[in-house]
Image (cartoon, rainbow, N blue to C red; front, side, top):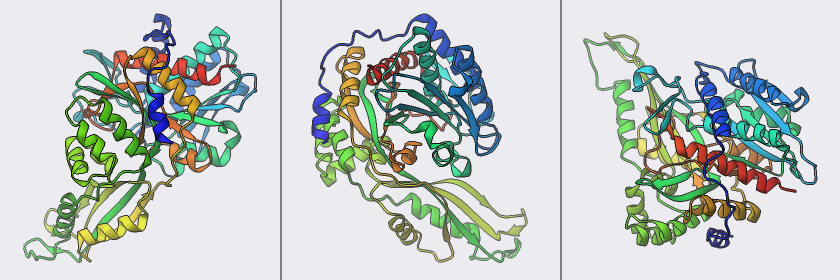
Length: 460
């Protein structure tokens, strides 16, 4: 299957698309982007409902009827928005997905206010600028543009902006919509986040389409102890047990391996990489053990694509300055290869920790889902448009190392593809971290890319 995909990445023809949208469309997208980035929509310190309501107001002002706009969610603070742009109905709808929630951000951790939209040195800064409010802004700006232009697609275009993709749990928007309002989002296929363009030292290398993703797992490592007075210390200390377990975890790595999607990715990268790793990339696609080690060491992103990863993310412990701890615990976040089972991960980690004082329990487990078979119509459109806008850039299938709402849609029978057209440095990924940002030019070029791609996939 993936051999034909790589052939489609060869330039086919030019769309004649301008890399940048008209200035009026840039202004609209930027206005939406700024407005929603400055709405705090973190899992615990914010809400997604104000974002949904702000977008709904813009849609109504643009002429969308209330009957085609839905705002609702699991609880009042966690609203999703679904809007339908009606076509001729010749074909089943297309679903365009993005999430409106963001990872928490503290002002003291950033060099600027994370909830003030800041344009500086060719970048847009702010929490959610990359994950995922750029795609929210572009989907909505482009939908309003289709409306203004009177475009009549052969299929309905559904945009769904979901709550708590980052937080998950009972408020997760795509799960809630599938369970309670499947009719609103049912589609032939979905375009989602997860497949952004990659740059190396400022040069665009590949425009990736996500066809699979790792699955998400949170584990709690917990040590309980009778404690005691700190003036009478003993070796049996809950914090020491936990610390030793985490040291063992930090020194362990799951085995390196490829799957159908990542083999295709590395085979394609071998043809275009300019870092001198071409030979190893090609050998990695063939599961050469030594090449896999070198490729994993060369890039954190490649390392994560090649193995299941588990890393400590939160700590708690102790109850007083002058007492031995009665509790020490840590959250360990795992991103698991699609073909690795829960039992395998748990058994492996218990063996690595090798301490029966450390209890391991599951606190959050997202559903694993099969990859999506890559559609020739999407690949042809994406390859032609990519070559028209960024000559010589290759379209590559990829597996996302982070989890997205695509896992629920795939499991429900809606094939989902991560497609964005936003380019960023491969080894400078700031989503979820400090000073998250999006290149200004990449934002606007992505706006054009997604505008043209959706028109091609919905054309009469």
